[in-house]
Length: 385
Image (tube, rainbow, N blue to C red; front, side):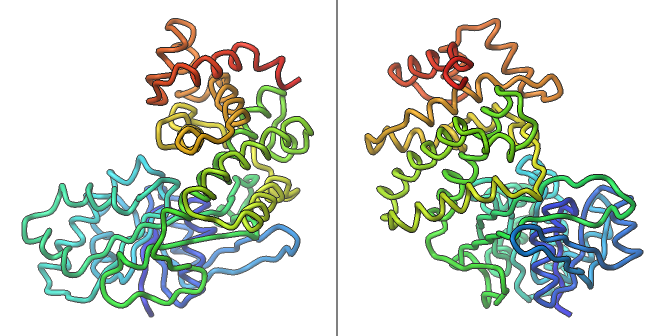
């Protein structure tokens, strides 16, 4: 069988990318540091994915195994693989980079000339490119030359809501929504581009990356932050609030105007995409907590992330941004004593000038925007009654 490695055996790894690879005839080896999860994968060699939405069903994913990603056994798996994917979180890419580099050196030293493609399937822009930069730090000069010849790092955009499920006896079972989108830059593969049902190939990845970032991620985050302010527990509860829904819809339309200007998106088709995103937020089978979606507010308020990047686009094209500004104010208002970034944000806003904190976190320096955000921030609870 064709062999693949999926770094990250969590819900996204099992419920999305790993499942697609298995269904396309790959033997999928999950690499993770969770010893219990890896042991269970090796014992059962299969798991169940519960797909929920208009058409609910269960799929059994077979031909899977596990390996501890911090042990030498992972190097042998990398040596044998045709494709490596990740779903570990942006911050963990630099941790797995050393193992990938060692595995690539092993392939080189054993004279392997089959192509290997490594695809980072993370919630970030150009994740594979970032991962390649980290891998290069650990390679010999010969290893760097080997990568140029035989190892590709295609960037990708991924989209599927995979919420946590209630704990049960079967730790491998995972619940996912029906909708999924895995888009990969076909120009960055080494060797023949694999035909994988469920993987969409494009030569204009950034358009899809920003479509997802500006719509799903932007809308999701604003729904969460407004929901927290109104005392809701889940995304579904929040989006069913008429006032929140109005703000979220109009924020996505504001970010959509940027996409229409930048990529010549068809207006009617993009409006349908926005409505599809809203319907996903309303999925009664997805109990997605607002604290999960709203976590790490400093990252979500950074210069190139889901709130500030679409706002920058509205400034570039001189389009409306009132609802995006409300969402940003709600993010600044996010309080969660169990979220390290939320605690840091609260402390800074209590001890420092709001304007300087906003500029430092977002990387923006625009007096008019800052004044509007600060006004919204100071009156946010009144604005969304």
